[in-house]
Length: 410
Image (tube, rainbow, N blue to C red; front, side, top):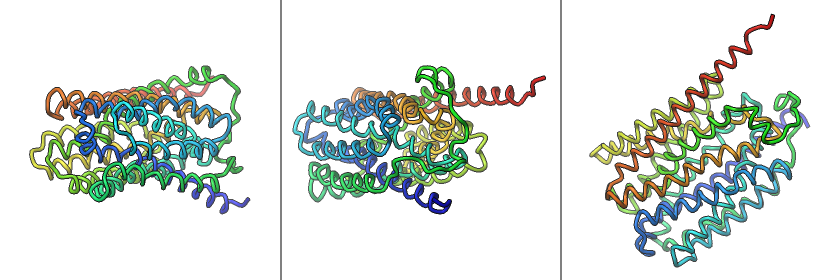
């Protein structure tokens, strides 16, 4: 296969991964938009609804490492098709529940399905794209993180007004089933033979030995845990915050809630490009600065009395929250060996879901106890500042190790 054909096929593959992730994120976020209506119909207070939101991340966390292991062992393609069909079915089942315990169980099962696919997605990016390409490739692929919620916020609000929240979930089953066929039809089984993607032979080591061989993985693990406190709090509570605290009606809220995600889309493109070009050798510092700015923007958003300035600050937070994803996962893929890409990506993402599980529950509990989102915003800001500190430690360790390698032996 010539170089042009290989390049074309791998970018088609990336587009299909984008479609899958896009579907994943509008399946995840539709419940955030439906939240105010569901809370009234199913008689849920913010703390209970926070538990419903966290049910997804609990199931999602459970299958991060097993999903990565299965992708490394049996191939990414089969696992992606299986995962997408699974979670699409449970998206629809969400619209059929009538009690909170059953809703929580269904959301756990929905999360299990999505969790199976994460390691496989990052494995494909790592296998098909070189180190220099990964920040941009990840950023393009991960724009779905922002565009999914930006798309679903106004569309879901409109569908709820026209049909109801139950019909919203039933209708959202269809796209996932269609895309699962496209993945089966067009995703390659194995990487193309491109010398630049993996040029170094790799030793055969156990998973435990690989983890011990890369101690920086634990700094990445805990920084991603701290980051996801803010990310999932922002993603799942933003629509309810605009509706409950800023008194914005459902239809208008759907439009306003899309602005921070559109800003996040721009952040992914711009910081992803910077991570591949200008700051290629300083990606970790780029991520750390992005998280620090996002934390400041979240705090400023809450204390703004004017809804317009609040929305501008939330959009700034969205730009830097999402913008760090491309460089972050490029750093992860550079840190870990090719044969363990899916498994160790699952380990890192498992760390993220610890934060993702805690955030909705704790924010909901704070809102329920105080009647205000102030403590919730402080909690999210604290998570971002902790992630910043851990990444700066990682950057220092990496710089020190590079200086040691650069010193010629006598």
